[in-house]
Image 1 (cartoon, helix red, strand yellow):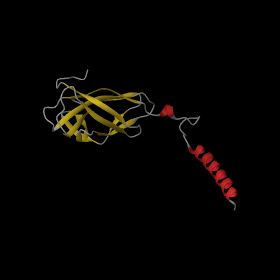
Image 2: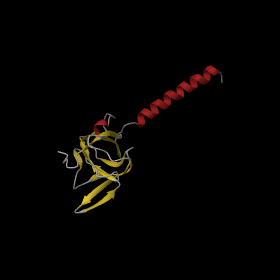
Image 3: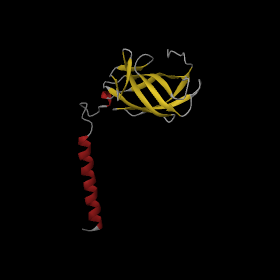
Image 4: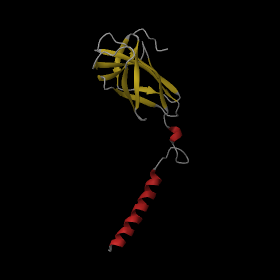
Length: 158
């Protein structure tokens, strides 16, 4: 086969591959556009009360999902802490969980006395007025990066 023939064959193959891949996309909506079915997440009210030591700090925030599909917070990371754990509170007992649901059309509220974040092994004790970087990771949605303000220890998040 000549060089021109190989180029023509490659071009036909690339075109056929593009058509085949286009036929495999989407699938959620009738018109192939399933973006309306995706979670749409936003974060509000994020704060960290100033901790008494650099050992551990709590983190609080609200994640709203205005989309039509559930999602889940699967992990949280921070360059300011060795680890960030997600805790669920049931009665007077808290325990670590692997994920927290963010329901479609609803919210996941992380607050005092309820579900919350625990920042473990802080690199230093953050002071009121500082910010702590957090990256929220989800089952479906792209990560959300925040600079969370450190508030007075008696802050209520309201």
